[in-house]
Image (cartoon, rainbow over all chains, first blue to last red; front, side):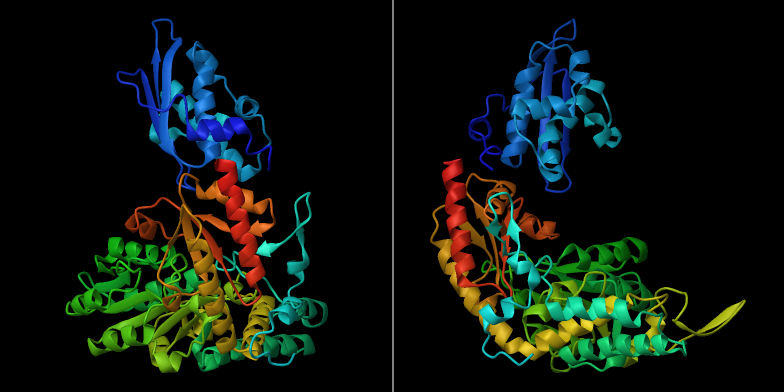
Length: 133
Length: 412
């Protein structure tokens, strides 16, 4: 429990560093977690070599979903889109620094799913959990 | 077991083996506040089902061997016990999988026979998805119209708006007797009386009311009533549809197969009488026996005593939750509701509330509780819901309140 609500998670939930919506942007994607209604949208600006210059997220949901989005967005600054596409579930778990049960793992991985779907340029119907396996 | 009136909660808690469970590495005593989702099961129910599998198991109907006869008698006795709880005749009680299937049975069999394009169905804004989606599907398929009785600012059934809607002469009024989110108890008898005045048929979603209140289908004059065993200390996988005999007799079968037929030829069949006409295939036999044991268990304790205990719990929990700064309870005053407290907490998502409470062994539910439109209406995404049953105590409410203060501390 104390692990799950590590200070960094509460802090990022209450005062996220990367909440917002970038305009213009090169990548935009949004999705929901149908189980709990959590919502995440991401916007990303890249340079001519496909390196992430700036990124932001917006949405609503529990502390795990929002804090993981904030940490994830922070981590992709300076990464290439290919590097973003190769991010996995383990990267998010490492960012959060906690073990999660299967239900809360879905909360934590929503932002990665949205980010990768955006990086791959998928359509709304093409998003699946396979993206974050 | 002797009747326990008024409720002796300490004594009856011993009937529920799971309540001695410990949760997590800290071995916290389970505080189960999620009975609105599903209730825990007493030894009477568990044993009835176990004993059936150990001693009597056979398929029912048509068998002549001893086990088949015993199994048939036990299955039908389950039906009698369920019927007795709601003052119905056993022939009017159809076993289904759950409340949802019961409502779908009415939607497929009765509604598709009796409703045409343009016919009006009245629902309410506080329905569970199970009493919304079947009618939305019918709307798409048949072009029936749906109208919704709103909830008042006090979270009550809006009787004035209902009277106004009735002027449009609905064919069906389908409504919850107790909201699974707000706890709101609707004036079912009056709703039905007014519906009958304009010639409408009524379907009561009693998933939350039959487990918690005395319910008498004759007194209500309900045409159909749907409920589930698992919310009333019985097993999952079985529910019931009550229907007035003349309605059931006039309805075509819902599913075809064994047991629902009288005779079958290669190109024709004749249906069995009710209730068997609606029970195609081998039913959930052990579950029907467990359902009967659950109904008998509740009836033995007394639904009046259970309702009185829950009223007391409801008043206690509302009083203590509303004292906590930053907590808003969504629902009517205790006098108009069952023992359900759905609440929102400033700045903290329900999932986080539920997770932190779980660390103290407290089981509550977080989400939209299968009533998303109701949450939209209330302008909230989701709630944390604590719900109470015959085995819950005021000490458990105190633990909930303490747990909520812990959440507040973590989220500062």
